[in-house]
Length: 180
Image (cartoon, rainbow, N blue to C red; front, side, top):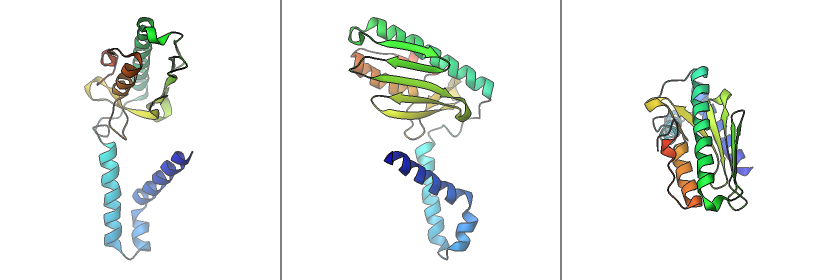
């Protein structure tokens, strides 16, 4: 909960700085210091979130739905294949319904939930290893999903985490809309 408060506070401060700089300049006499603070925030946000994700063109809603469905269906198929092949995943279960992919890997490993968020044009991941993440669609190279805060793609994160669980080579790069 404290993380959410800190994130919300950062978001609010940045929104205030970028949305009304003319009001801030009028309120403070140290314009040069304020401009450097504003530029510092902008540079930090841009470098942390850029990673080519901001440079792609916007995706229209029907295309977004198609890419989401292809991504989630291919991940579902691959997770089912992994569960069948891995002896470490006894009792694992994979379900996909209404845009929500739930992968229960057993009591020792937890549950992954991957779902589409149409209003935000994102795919959300809840991982028992790395926690919640929100992936944006980058339309370059046929489309792929990237977490803007660290630049890691959805498939790369799954590749790293699941390979440690099953202790075998996994190939999420063969799934739709992957850029591993």
